[in-house]
Image (cartoon, rainbow, N blue to C red):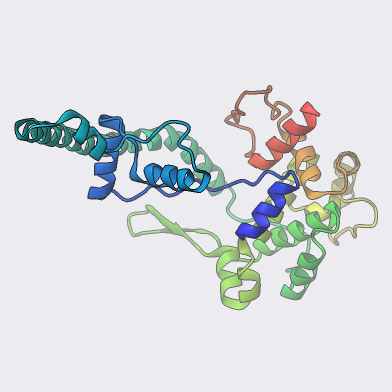
Length: 325
């Protein structure tokens, strides 16, 4: 965002989220400035220049007068012996400060390297459970035919018009996943070494314009999956089938399966009635259905349960704001 736009928004009462500044590179000048400011408790050169520039502009020197190293040296060293001893003392202090800084950075690097394996030890069990769950589903199934790229493009153009349109786009992507190869790849010893490309590889090879929006459209696919989970439905019924009566029922649906869809369709109608016609309200309604405890108490951090689905951070923040309001 340009600086002029940020200033305009701040003047009208908007709060601008700023990225944290990148840490300054470690140079000899930064070490000297850090030694003068933090060890000798002197003011920096930039503060001294800004102070005297303001003093010359306004004609007064009210306030804290900057104490630089030159003034410190002139005030505490009068004879030649005093100047030499002061310089030697500063050199010794500066050397100790430099060694301490380098040791601190080296220890921080060692601690970071030691902490990294412990993170993966904590995460290994959860990742193994997810991998086992993925391996159990060898192939996804659907009653719909393979969607065309033109149908997906048309659904993308209308995805943000309503929650129903967003779920239809996600349902198309779930149908597309049933016709691509995303199976595991094993080596000669039977170890898993990778997975087939799936939807990502298909879009990259045959629809580059859709591949450029891959991360965006896959969010709609995840939303459709959560919608089906919240309604209590399962494969091979597409999520779009759970929408109100205007949604077309796919061919090949037995009478017994149609009878099982009565309750999920009522739940879907309730969820769509609870949301306010926006995607964030739909995601919030699904989050409350899947994890009723997803709204943390004020001032507390939300901790996801092991078996509950992952809820986007923006949805949690939206729910907290609505609760506070």
